[in-house]
Length: 390
Image (tube, rainbow, N blue to C red; front, side, top):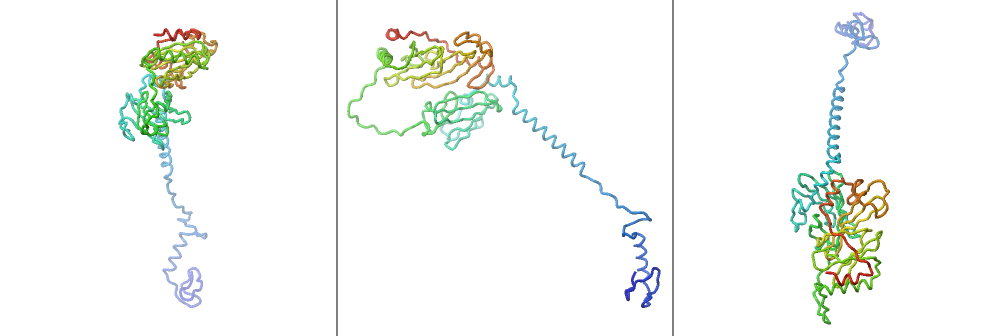
């Protein structure tokens, strides 16, 4: 303690300053005594002679960490449940969905003149060329998703249908089947829209005056006309074949000509267009079945235990592939063209390159059952066969 007048250090208990004689203020002595009582020589707070410690604050972080962990666990459980619900589909459920599949145009009617005919039951998305990029629709409470891919080099639209992210099958439609540009069309139950750059639509030009009389188109309703055309074609064609048959594929009175090259090779569909014969080369075919005037025909072939087939549609002007599939009995012991029934009894089933159940596979073929089989005439007898055909 120091003197308040001259600042000299005072002795403990002094009443007067030894230097200047100024009395010491009693209140100053009392404050010093109180401070000495509460602090030791290291200036550490004390109480009653023992070191005094301030009480610790309670740590409230632990309950919050536990609560956060519980919330995170619950959220993860909900997400896992949703993922399982969305992505996990049993084989039985998938088989039922495949068997009851309904195409978009069969399930939902749209205003085809609109640029975007989406409604509450169907939604479309489009690419930069205003072609359909994807389609989602609901049929009988089942929600289907479709992705559209365009192969401009081969002029085909590939439509991939899925249910809850599981593929069902793929549909391929050729550009040539689209008849009008920039407008929705229903083709085999699927909604398609292409621009003029895809289907090569040209503006109509005004007719010019002919410089010579036009040649009249041959009357195809006269059997002698189409018979003479086919016979002339066979005499001049370079197409290799062993046998053939005339049959009615589409709904008119002009027959088509099927030529069979060999049991291991393709067949050829020959049809009349503008008075000339057009040919279409099929996939490898051991046999051909068809629906009389139903536009559909199929080629099938057995190799190494696998029976493969392709379903085509002929509309009188062109041929397009509808579907293809196969069934494999898994043993690989069958030789080519032998024991067809063994292949059909069991094995792995595919439809448009997608695995399907046996139930769906068989019901699919049953709906499109083709009863007409081709009874071929040998090549050397073809001319007489065509002349006598009725």
